Length: 193
Image 1: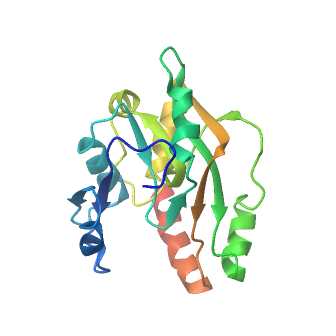
Image 2 (image 1 turned 135 degrees about the vertical axis):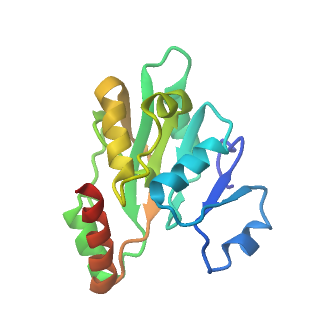
């Protein structure tokens, strides 16, 4: 909520968590949508369906955005723009974890590009897409266990432009241990297949 350009609305999709999310959210002006555990693709589609904006911003639960994130991304969606989506830098915030630092380094997140460029895929941890494009593509593939964001943005980039804007910055929490990282990787690679 501490954005230089305030969001028109905030929709939170909660996958039936048991961490007190729904109680915490009662303190904020958000629309809470409960997702019964049918997967990330289903959850993201619910978020889109329950939002009203022409541009939909995605931010994962283990992330937080710089205060000018919306402003830096939204400027590329001016009328007449050919841009279908905007992504940006994703920076590791739990740098005290050696495992998180190693995985972020291997994943190319410790030294992200400083120049704008067009990309073929983008993570939903830092992504804004035109609603009309999401709808034209058919939304996120709900049959995938993981990589639904990679799948959708690849489909988008085959027909439209997704811009990497290095000034649109989101911070993420990397896997803090090898056991957490292993489970995450296994689920991630299952989604690819």
